[in-house]
View (cartoon, rainbow, N blue to C red):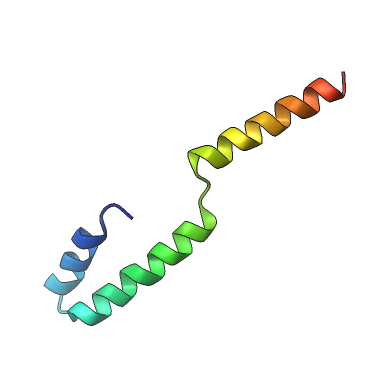
Length: 57
């Protein structure tokens, strides 16, 4: 997550401890990393679709 430090600072400014803020960002980062497709994932999917289209013609 590119804005992790910014997120931590915002949480800290509202009274959340540094330790809690870091735990928040760690969990959010882990969740997002597991569920988001990368540019390479999308390219691989596009190539798979093209291959399927070609093989079914």
